[in-house]
Image (cartoon, rainbow, N blue to C red; front, side, top):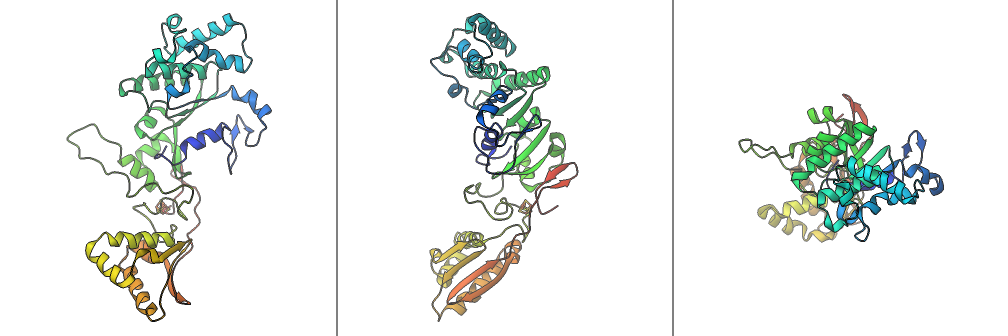
Length: 363
Ligand code: SF4
């Protein structure tokens, strides 16, 4: 669970080995499948299925619903006789509430509603009798009116067949309804994981707290809850140093991973204040004189100005929020370059905190 772009879908696909993982390991039924060759993976694939977010895109428009649901049986060589395939398909259709099954069997996806299409996709996954289903936002594209019904169907199937879902969602209310355990992701990292009840009742990670506060309450007398922390999810290709949440974290510490680009962001933010922006512009000139790399932000200065500019930078750092100003190790002059050097972030690792794992320096 987490905002868009935090890596939930990629993780789900990596678990099924649909994309290669760059680190870590994947175990399925006790077997390490991280680097298993395709021919050895193939028999396992029947027990690991996926349901995609968009049922319209998941079904071939030229294939009848019955054929689409039965297709995996043929691909995996589990049934060849048309009668046998059809009988298994009709059973699967009944199971997911895609009825009257005999009438719907020869229909095409365009004849079905969104809810019916998602039921067909679920039937296609279930026909192989899987043990694990990765469900990637399976109700996000459905009308509100049918979401609950599809979720209830998934819960029924889970109980009946002892299924495990890896349920991917950005919607905490849905996760609360369906999940026993949850893992909160931010920019490719799991920041808190544990029993759903525990985390919903008492979130520990600042990002989890922010997500839970953002759940709307359907009561007009209650004030709107706080929105997610400032700013957008940063670029995952070039994530922030230290704790990836640090540029947005309301509880950030000086040791959480401040770096050169945070100083540039701070300078930019000051420019949005008319008064401060004017004075900064007069003392420092344009922002694009600065460059940031790793723990350093720096700019070239003329020899006659460097002392004045250094003093000015020190003064605006004194003015900065304390985690940022305390994170600066030193401001120094190196051959007419003014360098703002941040300290190394503290190492971050998941820690056991009251029944769950949390990756945060507050614990
Ligand atoms: S380590 Fe914890 S306190 Fe520091 S930025 Fe990350 S979430 Fe916030």
